[in-house]
Image (cartoon, rainbow, N blue to C red; front, side):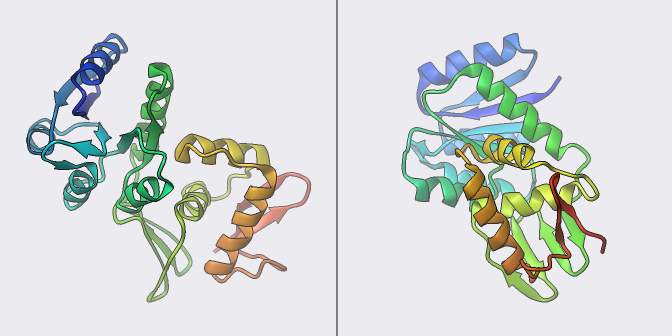
Length: 224
């Protein structure tokens, strides 16, 4: 039975989420603040953490940073903030996903299943040639040079490097990016992000060898 830690200062949300997740078969531990939450995480070794940004004795960003120093357990931010900068900051600290309040409990369960499945059996580093993705730090390097990708660029690269040889249609990529990032992605947006990722990893957009276009079908990771 998977263990979930919820760190949420709103007692009504904490109680209702805990009750719902228990009916879905999860073992749930709840905390209203940073100090209590970190103790819970240390003691119960959770399979996923649901983390509010605003906490009475700190904030979710601080909790996320402390957890990432020791563990790559999936973290989903629960946020009422419409501030894109806050969302991006959370993802760059190593969070796996976020969901905006108010949200459907069924949608949250789907997100939990997605991030826990993605983490199952995953190594901390994924490589393709001289490109290395550290999924704990959320960093990308090529050779000895660190590459600076936006949250969506990082997630797009991660999709390909985690699924070598798999062909993705444009529709599948759009759906995957929406699922993991929570943002609405259009067909034109996907084209732009693929071009940006190729440029940043040194893959010639006019003759790509790393993220390969399979004409009429989609994209896949090229041979190393």
